[in-house]
Image (tube, rainbow, N blue to C red; front, side, top):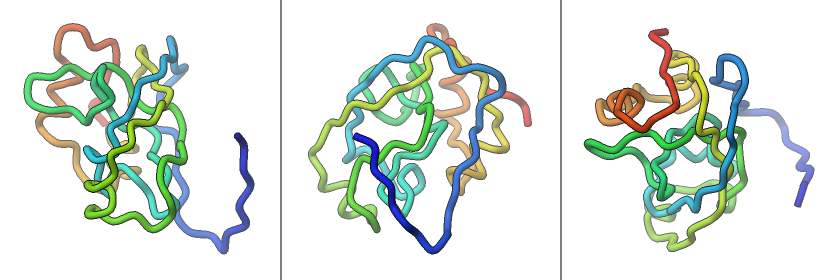
Length: 134
């Protein structure tokens, strides 16, 4: 369902992708695994967030399965880490399984540096998502 919201401005997200986002698939995102770095104040999962094949954020030794293609509403506005952690929802989100992601832009969108696990996850066998050097 498409919705239109009137806002007074605020955070906007640019696409962190270089070139096309190919082979989109849907994964069920575990909302309790997310933080306010991955979810904006409007309740949207930010574009470019790297996920594993089970819809979780990237952990140690886990390859990036895909990256969120566009901001996707997953929770109510003004989430906190506490409300996200308590949310037991698993919602479908479309990710690109073949893509090149600009590291600088992704880190700007997330508002933090990528973790060592996330960086390594782009390089692990099975990942068709590439992280640019800048």
